[in-house]
Every structure is written in C-alpha cells, then in structure tokens.
Length: 505
Image 1: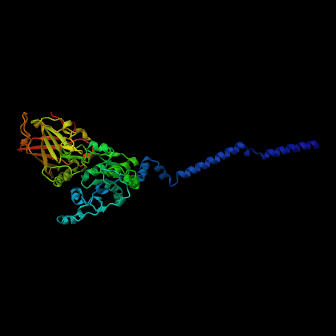
Image 2: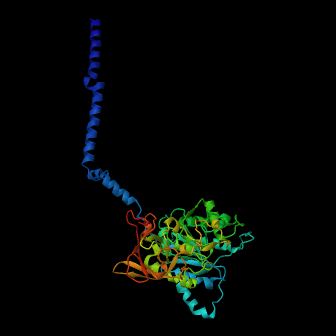
Image 3: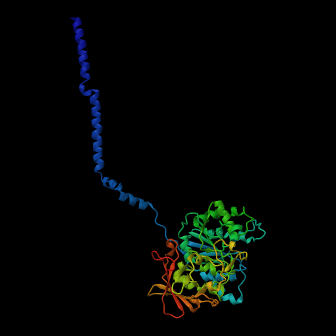
C-alpha cells in the first residue's frame, strides 16, 4: 500500500508539471503571439502615417515637378549681362607724353559709362597757356590720374629697355586695388596712344566667364617681335583683358613674380611671365591690334579679319587712317559709323558688278575698293602690303599673317573711296554711308573693261546688326544695285541669305 501511494504521488507530481506547461504557453504559440503583435503594431503605425496632415505634402515632394522647383530654388540667379560698367581700364602713360596722348583718350573715353585710372610716373608739368582752358575740362572728360607707387626696389637689368616697364606692369595690381569690389568683372590694360572700340570690347568679353582665369589679347603683327618676345603674350599696346578671378590671383603674387624676371624688356612680357607661373595661356582675340607696323595701315583695315575691331595702337607711328587729315581728325570721322553699327565697323564684304566686270570690296564704315576684272575672294580678303613691319624692311616673311604684294600693273590697282558721311534712315531702319573717290589711278589701261574712275562716290545701304557676333563668324554679303544716279554706285550690304556666296554668275 505504501509503495502504491508513492507511485500515485509521482504520477500526481507529473500531472502537476504538465498542468504548469499548459499548451497556451508552448514555444510555437509564443512565436505566433509575438509575430501577430508586431504585425498589428506595424499596421496601426502605417495607418497613422497615411492619415497624418503631412502625408500629402510628403508624397507630393517626390514628384518630378516639385523636384524641379526645389532645384530651381537652390540654383543662384542667372548672371547679368556684362556691360561697360563691369570693365575697369588701367591706362599706362607718362608725365612727358600725357598732354599730347590724352587727346586719344578723349576720342573713345565715356566718363559717364566707363571706369578706370590713368597712371603716370610723376605729376605732369602745367599745360601750355593755350591749353589751360582744355585742361580745366579734362577732369570731366578723362579718367582720374594717379601716380604709380615707387618701384626702385625692383631690379631691372635689360640693357635695351627702360625700367618704367616695371612700373607699367604693376598697373594691373594697382588698378585692382583701387577698384576691387566695385562690380569689376574685367581689368583691361592699354597705352595712352591706344583707341578702344568699347562696344566691341564688351561683345568679346561677354563670351567668357569672369569667374574663371582668362587672359585675353593678341600678339604682334610683326613675326620677329613675336619671336623676340612671345607668341604667348598679349601685347600691352593693343591692350589685353584679365578676368576678375585672374586679376585677384595675379595681384597676390605679382610683386614676388616680378623679382624673378629682371632681364625682361617690357611690361607686357613681365605680365605674361607671371601668367606662365599661374599656368594661364593667352586666349587670342585678333581684334586687339598692336600695330607693330610703319606707314599706311590701309591694307590691314580694308581687309580686316572676320572678328570685332577692338583696338588700334601706335597711332603716333602709323599714318592717319584717312588721307589729308590729322590722326585725331581721322579718328573723329569714325564716330558716325561707330554710333550707327559698331559691330560692323571695318568688316569686309566682297561682291561683283557682273555687267562691268568689276570686283567690289566694302570695308564698312571705312572704305570701298573697285577693281577692274574679277578677283577671287581668297585674294581680296588678304591684306595688301601698304605698310612695313616693325623693323622697317619690305620683307613679306616678317609678318605674323598672310599678306599680298602691291601690284605694279596699272590695270590691277584698285580705285579707293573713303568714308565721307554716314547717317540712319528711320523709315527703312537702315544706314546710308557715302564713300568718295580718293585720287585717280592712271587711266593708261588697255583692258577692254569699263573705267571705274567714272564712279565718283559709292553709296552703301546696310541695316544695323548689333547681334552680328552672337552668331558663327561669317563675312557679310553685298550686292551691286542698279541705279540711275550719275557718277555713283549703290551697294547693299547685309547678312548672307541661304546659299548666297561671293561668286560671279
């Protein structure tokens, strides 16, 4: 009995243990319980997110339209167009030459629209008595004049040059310090005998980003000058432009840089040496004209390259660009075409008078040439050598561009007509410029071709095209118009139509 009770007790204990491990607390059911709990919690959380007040805006933010709007808000506003106000000029002059050279600045300087500084080596002497009244007007007509800082601490060892080159090269830094932070985008260097076509300068610089490192100019017309100095250099007389970002970098290191080049000749090669240290090449714009030539520059201007005319230099060296005038009078004559259509000044067009077998070349705003016979555009667009290069030798290999010789055949000499007047016709929105015959080549020509000397004036009609250089560079086309006017030729110049070319048909 006693053993039986023990067995019964053991079975009772097992039954109690089984009752403590009720099926409700088994491991599979616990896992199922926790899985159900988390599923319900996630479902409730999702409902709360779906019906929250921010859900609609959050879902819309993922749409492409709102992505574009957010990106537009993050982008900076588009930059404004570059204007004359954004360009600062640093003009190199000297006390000795200032009273004479300042007249060149009066030709192109616009005190109400331009900013810049003229830098002298010392205060200029008082003007002659006859110029006292003009001197009183200079403050209103010219840029402010300042005296360059002392450069005696810089070495200069070139035996053929002048140490003023150090002073002039530092005009970049001194001008930058004078006008930094005043909406400057470009710093343009030039000499006191340089004339700038300001509107074309703006057109050219507008193509480039002033926040990048740009050094823009052109080399010399003299091949030997470029060999002696550098084809990588922007010649300072013709002028060169430095972007704001580059001017700032140059100002920080220029004085240290100059100490490393005491043997260089001029100011512009010193600037280029510092550009080499900064790793910035010359961006060439052939409209900057150094004019390292002597004599008559007619051949250069009458066949100007297809690029905006930006500057003319060495105006005390070359002959007046119009005959029987002083250089100042000649430059004043360009005012009318500059105001009418600055983009097209000196741009060449070539066409033919089919009936009379003449070739007509129009350098708009400057001159017209009429040739007997048919001359191909490839020849007419090449400048004729009416000038000598800088070393005064008649050497065709001495130029840094193609030239053609002056013909000795009397029948091949062109009849030249120079600008006499230009005006705007409001009713047709076109310009009318008149060109008058200058001299008469010898009539002793046996060609059976009409004599152009019967034409005493040429009238050129042209609509202004301020956006000429916003398009791919191309010469304008021209057409000789029928006219009943005696001793006159009428020509129309304008943008070439589709399939229009310069050929005789």
